[in-house]
Image (cartoon, rainbow, N blue to C red; front, side, top):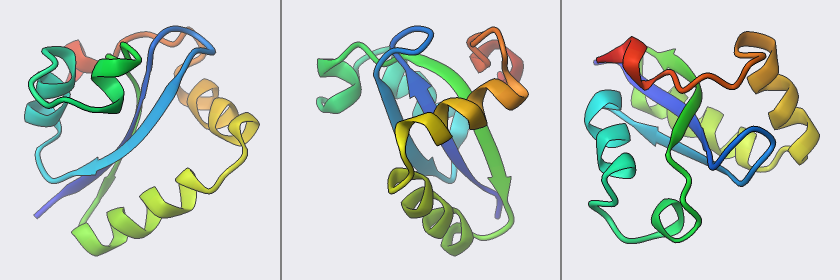
Amino acid sequence: MQSYVYILASQRNGTLYTGVTSDLIKRIWQHKNDVVQGFSQKYNVHLLVWYEVHDAIEHAILREKQIKEWKRDWKLELIEKSNPTWKDLYSEII
């Protein structure tokens, strides 16, 4: 089963949220529609700006933990490497 690590942003260079899921479309929809109370709802973090596919949830969880410990600049570089305009990628995954 595929799993995903993802980064959401409030805007370009804004607040970032890193998460992991086995159902990317459903999880991003939940963030965008404030279905679950928490960080993304509180800070209006709804733009999917980066994601990575993994073959096993264990690998995705390890990667998420790694990224969460990174410096902010490293996360910005990761996003801009594949999404330099900070386009919301949600429309590409649905």
